[in-house]
Length: 171
Image (tube, rainbow, N blue to C red; front, side):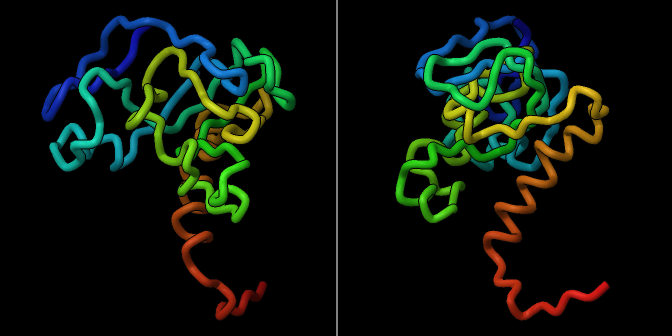
C-alpha cells in the first residue's frame, strides 16, 4: 500500500509499505477514502516535535470503510463507513471513565505519532468500537471529513477544556 511516511525533519515520502493487520482483538482495519492535514501533522516535519519516530505513517484523522475487525469488536462490522478522530480511547482507564479521552493511558493522541496513522491506503485503529464514528455511506466525503477533523478536535480542545456554564445561549 502507499503511505505518507515521516523520515525526519524536512523529509517525508509517499511510498510503498506493509498493510496493517489486526494485532489486538479490539482493533479494526479501515480502507481510507480521504484524510485531512492539521498543524500536528506538520510539527514533526518542521522539527517542532521530536516525539515521532522516523518511518511512522503520518496522520490522525480520516474517513474510510472497515475491511477487518478483531474478535472483540462488538458495534462495528466489515463494510461500515467510519470517521476516525484524532483521539483513540480504551473506555476503561481512569481518564476514559472521567470522559477525558485525550488523556487515555492506552490511547490518546497516538495515530501518526506513537503508531502508524491515517495518511495511507489502510490504517489499524486500536479500540475500534470506541475510537470511530459510524457515518452514512451516502454522506459526501467533504462533509464526512468534518466528523473526523473539525468536530472531534473542537470537542476535545474546546468543549472539554472550557467551562461554558457562564455562557447564556439564546436563539
